[in-house]
Length: 322
Image (cartoon, rainbow, N blue to C red; front, side, top):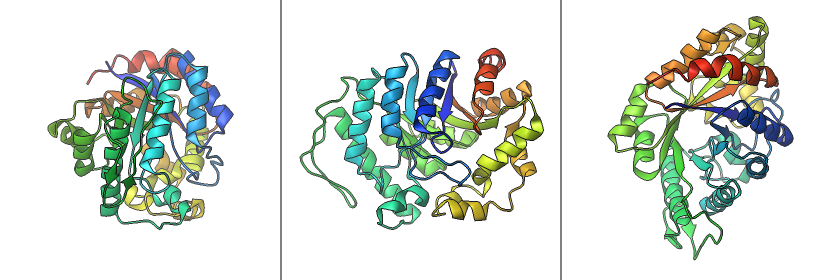
């Protein structure tokens, strides 16, 4: 059965609002919630970027059934993999095994802040691969020392970790990353409705959940929804991660997205209150092989979306089958 989740956009909402949104997601029947792990917002208009870990701790205490995950954390520069493993283990205990650690190779926007520069894609993939090994080993209690090309681990041990290992999912935008997710992780994450990606994950032996993120802007006024989506989410349509992974700050994303029009944004995501259009957008991902769908409601207005999800969207989306 397909599971429906909610995106906790830490770039668009402050820490208390994120906790409130997570509680509402549970109340309206969402199966899980995924939070972004950023140091910066993408564009200045978004205006937020709290640290996700204390927010997850607060959500763990404010909810009882909602599964949680990061989508995604980059353990490549800004934070050492050992610290990420410790954060994941603590979160898993606080929410009674409702947490999945989502990992990715990151972007310059968030990782450059520690002053170590920003490596090319090959090094980033190698860093992520090493980081996964360390995190999985610490979460399982099977690793204390590690000497890799990029990371060292010296006599480390997590004293507080769940008896059931926190699962790890890896974000992938191509077949190589999908294979990495299949061979080293417990699940797969993407933002593309591409059956080749889920196929590459399964063909490489991946048996875990496949998670997709679907952006939308629910609003009774379609024109207002289009303008809202453009204001807060135009950064997502600059040409993929070849661009988004390299820009250094909100000014860069603001400048690069000047040519992106509201009409173009609306052509790439559903804006408005057409239930069928929203369901059809999700159906494309399910047909592409995903079994967990993260719904990302763009903009400050979340309550109207929650009400629409409970009464209109969820009943139709739960009928979908891969």
